[in-house]
Structures are given as C-alpha cells and as structure tokens.
Image 1 (tube, rainbow, N blue to C red):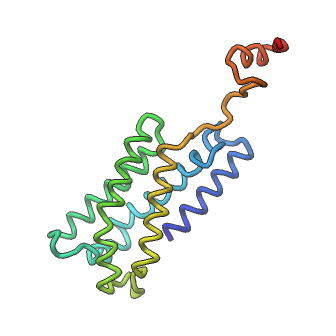
Image 2 (cartoon, rainbow, N blue to C red; image 1 turned 45 degrees about the vertical axis):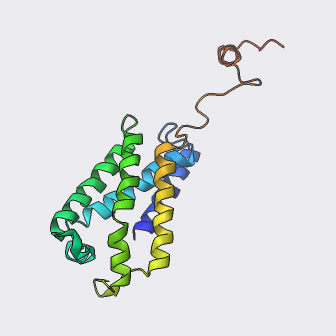
Image 3 (cartoon, rainbow, N blue to C red; image 1 turned 180 degrees about the vertical axis):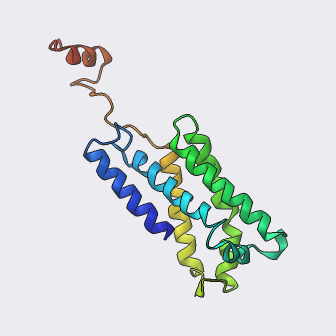
Amino acid sequence: MPLLSLVIITGLARLAGWRRLGGNRFNSLSGALQAGVAALFVLTGTVHFVGLRAELMKMVPPMFGDPGFWVTVTGIAELAGAIGLLLPTTRRPAAAGLLLLLLAVLPANVYAATHHVTFDGAPATPLLPRLLEQLLYLAAVAWAGFGSAHRGKVNAGPRGSRSMRVRSQAGASPSK
C-alpha cells in the first residue's frame, strides 16, 4: 500500500500540474512528489497508531528495547515529516529528517524480512525487494525535498535575461 499511495498520489498531483490546478506547485515532478511522499508518510505514520501497531512492534529488533516507544516515535516523525514536506519553509528540513528516518528504520525492515515477521498473517516483504523499495523511498524523498519544485514559474524569454522577461511581460518587444 505505501508504494501504491506514493505512485497514485504523485501521478494525480502531476496530472493536476498539467491541468494547471494548484498554481505552480505540481508543475514539476519534485512538486508532485511532495504530495506523493506526504501521502506515503501520512499512511505509514497513521498505521503506527491505528491498524498495524501490533505488527509494527514485532518489527523492532529486541536489542532496541521497548517496541511501543519506537513505533510511537517513528509514527510521530513520519506524520511530522509529511506535514513539513508540504510547507515551503520546512520542506528541506523535513526531507532531511525523513531521509534520516528511512535510514534509522532500516534495521527494523531487515529484522522483519529475516525473522519472518507477519503482517495480518502475510509475510513481510523479502529482504531484496524491501531494500530496493527503501532506495526508491529515499530517492523520492530527496527529489521531493531538494528538487526544483516550481519549474516553469516565469517565462525566461528568448535569451533568459530578467530585463527581457519584464519587457516581454509588459508587451514590449525585446531588443536584438
């Protein structure tokens, strides 16, 4: 479900960008990924408290201690990161935090795959596909947080100079 939510919401946001909905926010893949990654972390953060909490607690390697504590902390971090990613002033710090979080939870994902932890009776994702999925999430978060979020905001004009853009937008023809 998390991967599916990332793909679907990113695709819908990109479609909104092509339809010129939402201002310039979704005109770039980075902007669309902000929505997709936020949806991903809202989904995964929510299940830390409702639905899969018990299963997520089984993922925490015993050496980390109280699994309830870690599931709560990571759930809060995921929800906060999702919100932060959507706000222009906190987008980059939120992305940095989510990147660190993805690396921090890697031991739990490895533990779940190698110790046959089940989720609602289904086995955890095998290790190699899970690691590849984790790499995809890392790339999506990095692109959403640090990519150019507003491509095509200003028409650069024939030569790209600011003065030419101003004259072009004012209706004057640019000098050659």
